[in-house]
Length: 398
Image (cartoon, rainbow, N blue to C red):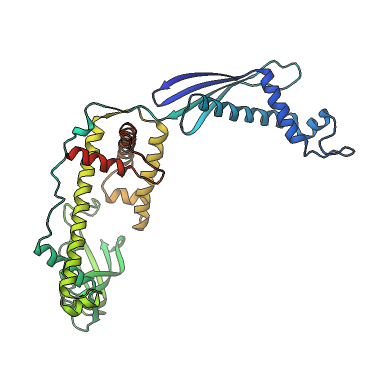
């Protein structure tokens, strides 16, 4: 076997593998021997029939194809072993010449492999001198922040009580509504048993005000205009007729924040509950601060890193990002095309953004691995690149 190597790109290697006719005959004979042992021909013990009869039974072309596949496998494995190549994904293979295995044939096997490999990463400046924003890691949780957190917790533990009176701000209601344009019902402006807390401002301005005062079972018709800057451009600035039915009205009963409330949550006392909430808020603040530092770090790292990106990695990252967005659309119960409309982008722009983001993500990943290798940061199979990020943030902050 003869092997030639050439760098097609920094991240892609071209390998030429050649087997002589003699080497291919030996591979053919090996394949034949393995197959012959299982061939049953009347009048002979398994594998003991004449070679010509066995070959005719198996099929010359089948044996030839199996021999070539075996040679391709052996050649590929030997080629990457010989130069300690760590390929990314499967290689592309082009067969230039192959034997027929007919008696007298002097042709060997010649094929070319192209494999993506991890490229060298360089940096235009010292990555330990990246400037990061001032960390607020030691930020203290204020009394106001703690009070707000306690109120939010109480709201989450609120009870709902059905009422017969008209709905008012602060109540939870369920409504069924249908929007019309010139007496034509529009599916995009319809919802059944839609949950809503009056005063939450989750619907367009003026809509919730129309519900105030209505009792369970009552209906109302009104016209309302969408804001000109509404995210869905096809309805922005337009006025529609809405027919609404109130399906349910419930009063939200928020518990008082006292000792009884604290103990109902498993705390020893109200003071103990506030202490526990405060500690959680401090952890959240530190996590947010670290995330801000991490985001800033990778942005700066992408600016100073240089590498030829392997197409295999970029394509895989593009697929991953696209799948994430498709899952978001699916979870919202809308089509991918409708999701693109909702975020005011086109398929072409979305694809371009995905390609750009995928390239950035791959560059950052390669950069962090290069830093880990240079700085001898040991990464096990279970370690994420956040270990390198944490090391680099600590280094930069010193």
